[in-house]
Image 1 (cartoon, rainbow, N blue to C red):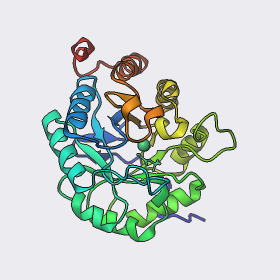
Image 2 (tube, protein in one colour; image 1 turned 90 degrees about the vertical axis):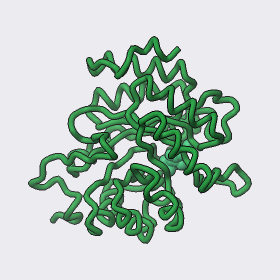
Image 3 (cartoon, rainbow, N blue to C red; image 1 turned 60 degrees about the vertical axis):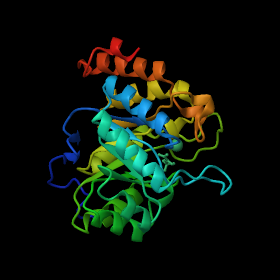
Image 4 (cartoon, rainbow, N blue to C red; image 1 turned 120 degrees about the horizontal axis):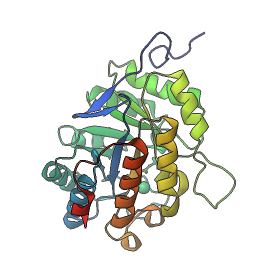
Length: 276
Ligand code: PEP
Ligand code: MN
């Protein structure tokens, strides 16, 4: 019995989801890069320009941050959305920004190319329905404790509202060993692709919590046939206001893109020497 009707792979070819002009699920590997949080105009502009030069296809950056502690940096809110929207336009890099509630969706609509629903809100069903109704593509992250069936039911809430543009994201599930922030479930992500026609990407930043592990996990995801990755990049990681241990600095991101290009046998958009 098929439980999730619209997300199921049954009799369906793989879906290609486009955020602005960036494809997910077309057989390529699309890279989304940017800071955990938008912190200032200079920070998001510099990062956008740099990741674009290195061949990233999309920009990320949180403006509404779902922090574990209410005393931690909560994001710049609407001002952050304005800053990433401007940086995105200047770098010609469509952007994805997370919404924590329905009011955030109103701020994001018309300013971003894709809405992110984070791990903590994966089963916020009212938010899923509201995100679907924006008409924008939705990047739906797996909760740290969700089974794959639960991920697909969550996706179903978006699809059933008439929005077919859902990209799933494996961002690590809760394990027992604090050596990594979460456990990157590569086999789970591959099993998801057996179960659904929707594209599936990897988030090695939140999965591992360590900058040193991001490149190898992205390469593993690409070699295994996932549809892309979303990674955190910051101009000065030790100064980042959130997730500093898992942010790549610019040279590390350039190296990652070079090695990814070699693995996939594709040319980066521009000579990477221009990044220096
Ligand atoms: C994020 O992308 O910054 C984020 C908070 O991710 P997650 O929901 O996967 O923890
Ligand atoms: Mn983060």
